[in-house]
Image 1 (tube, rainbow, N blue to C red):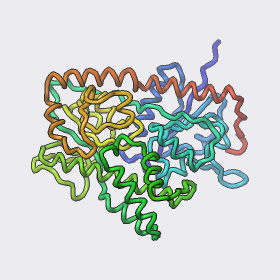
Image 2: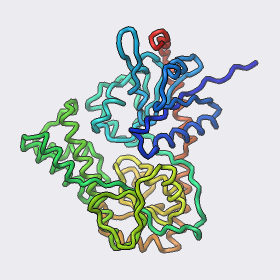
Image 3: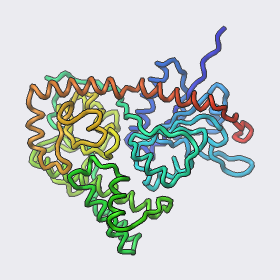
Image 4: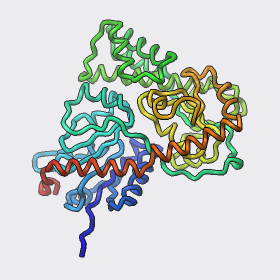
Length: 406
């Protein structure tokens, strides 16, 4: 009788770090794709993690672990020698998919220690560049993997009831500047912060990798950053947060003359009097809105990858309006499968007029759906996950210390 194939453990992060459950929803999508590839899965929910879960991960039938966001690396278990990282005791292949700037203050929890049995995959290749400047490399790095959309339910074109949809949360950008001023008193660091945000909000800001942008500003000021310093990484995190939130505010300001459906928003955000506002919602509910929208306006959060904020509306059959990024230029071009606008959204009205052109709209939506199916399928990423785990196993990983986790 043939034996059952070994399984992959799929980790669901705690809801406190995933309030809209976008990572949890994506994890279920990847799990389905792994199952369709003939690989059984074991779901481990960190919201309900118990000793029995640690023991289940020890089982020899579990050949590897997939963690969207890398949150498996935060799990500590009690041992005779004190708390230890679970993945260090398991010593099994781990695939960690990293989807945010490594300079963020919470990132040391998930990727600071690069383990020999870990494959770290990045949705933006620039994240790998930034991380390599402060984390000693030990495992394997997959510099770029595409975001994979959750398969949506799409309404036919004639039944889409939402003309313009924007889903974004906006914090006052000056909060980030205040954080820097409270923590840095040397004027050169304040000048560095201002130089980074001014460049990042410039005409090429959405196309310029964050590491390149910061390097250029450091060079112009004669500053050498120490990425190993948590304080200096914090400055970069704050600059990135300022740029993202200020650009989102610019987007909503440019749209203030249009009635839109706004999910999220923030304080002091200008809107049209007939704009309908909804609070931030679970990601599954947002996907349903994508499937009802004709046009989705997006401010891309990073330059080197293609965010799910762009890919998921495309997969839902909506026409995306967005500034270009370095990766969208490479993979999608401009004004082919989405409406391309300036980084400051000053030409947003021209973009909306183009989005309403029936000939362009039909061609762009069809092209976007085709691109998403070809380049961004969960099945393709599932195959990559399996290949990374098998490659780690082929190197002869040490076995699990089962006694230590009991």
